[in-house]
Image (cartoon, rainbow, N blue to C red):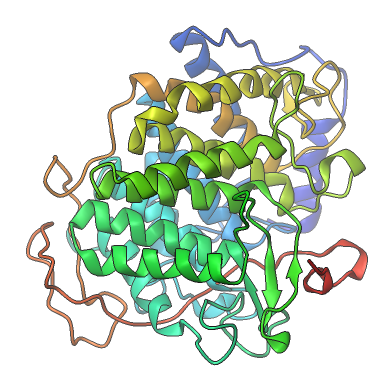
Length: 453
């Protein structure tokens, strides 16, 4: 899509007479939630043209980066899981497979200038969700969901960098990209999240050992502090001795689901129960004290959220809901936050000529805030549909009905044994490779990693 076409589409969404005040939502009615989710999914997919003539499957038009398309199709996999509506399955599968790259590991050559560890991870986590949720498998001659998730993990593990800060993943993969010297929570948090979920799905303790290692490292440099707040990152040029103490919803969400999955994998160990509960308690910073509605504390109230950041609440909502399945003791506390957030999000979806374009400021829900985009639509979709989690089946593993085929050598150099069918053994090795991430825009040229403790 040309920029002019994108602008025309966006203008259609946000201008003209409003025909409705918001998306109707009765939060205790599954049918109402599904109807609202259907509307939100439809309007989000209006931004996507990769399945149209001349489009590239798996790419959103500017101003969106490649990682957000992977995140968006993760939302569409969730949409199918929650609602049973397969309307978007073909376009989702097409996009997920088109972007795998020549080595089937989501390292696509045309994204070299922007792809970091977190970028790659968002695609890998979408594939992991597809495996866990028994989303329809690709044709047998195509890459499979579990193998794709393993390939992402296997390409990232060898990039664990012990030359500075005692370990950790860098934000960027390639040294010519800005942020190469930054070690951040979203790259390491997604790696932790993916490792925990692969361990649960396959039973392979190599993945859980990496998850433990990542947790310990983040704790050691205080990316996770004594209150379980998750900070954004640090600079390896100063050996991670100062932190960027900005808190983002998606950093907390990635760690929360990873910890909850480790609780599940370790059969309810006390240490992972305590960590999960403490991380959940620390998410209070992202919810208003009066109404319990989610907001992006670092940028929302000052109108400085960039395009990437406008989508971050989607991932906290996504991972909070998934946490209730991995660690059921969290259910009541999480739903006490997701329910009012969903109601507020639906009421904020009252803009544009269709009267339902979504804004970002959920706590200020009486009037559309004038913002619009994929991020706002996705965040509203995820928080609304997450309220169907109690009636949704638990994510599967290879011993509880999972059908996705894996490959322990995926993304590696062929020195690992291949998965037989979709099973695994604890003695199998995890392969090798390398990572990727988002190019986070930074406020007004400020270097986040110079913010000190």
